Length: 407
Image (cartoon, rainbow, N blue to C red; front, side, top):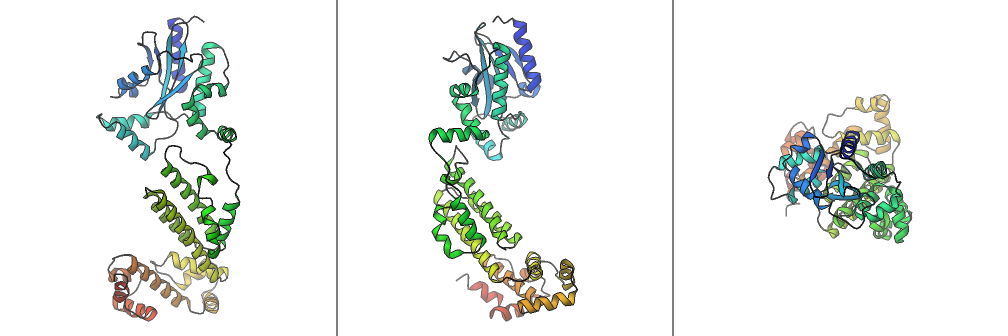
């Protein structure tokens, strides 16, 4: 097929207008003959450097009768060789997914010797996002427009291994296909179901039989990050925490408590750099959630009383009144007060006071906050009254209680 210069230009301009992707035509001498790009891209201090990189991928290659996909610093391109002119049309860059802050930091580090880091940051965030499947389709369509020949996707992927490595993350059918080819299948869900059943029912004594063979391994959930084993393990564990959190809530654990624990353990996981530490935190999380469910189930009360207990726990730092709790349960204050004392064995006011003392114990043992501040936060009238109530519940003063954790 003979290509006239104006036809190549028209094709490049049309492709650029249709997909808002930069399009270049590099002639047989390695010169950029046509450039259809945005003004933002052209004004970037990295524009010329990127063009130099693009040229490296347009030198003669063995396979020239299909689109050639390539990437550079997370920037995605494809080129189509024109046999008649011996030149190449290059489309890109785009990105397959939004650039995360972590990934952006990696990119910045790779450009340590280059100035204008802010311009680089702006450049990456100005690019269009085209997922792998969409980008592949654009390449196939462009090839068909030029050569009037349909290409089989599998053939293109066989000759573009780099594209396959990104596409399989985006396309579940291809990932399943690869699993069948490699004879690597995920295990069944029996371990996951058993573990979550134990968490939901607070069966701490059963955990040791299953926790080491649970969902928290790549054999069960697959690899969630192809580029980093540590990142993959963290992703797996974060998924596990979410599942355990849901099971614990279904088992009766206070939602606010469950979600706070979930956030805590996810933050702990993110801070680790070694597999053993990640596994240890995950094991701790499993036992912690299950123990708390066991405690919650041991104190099983009516739905009304449980609702009051959850509200009290979530609002310990606020003023809590009998009228508020009665309104929450659509009951009269007198009836609620009688029901609560009948089931729990103490009055609502004494229960609130006891929960505040438990919270004070946590703050005294885990923080260095002044005792006076803790008393004020937990709605005690003054520090002396707080000390009196604290000693009544624990047998020691707040100061003595704290010192026992510092010895």
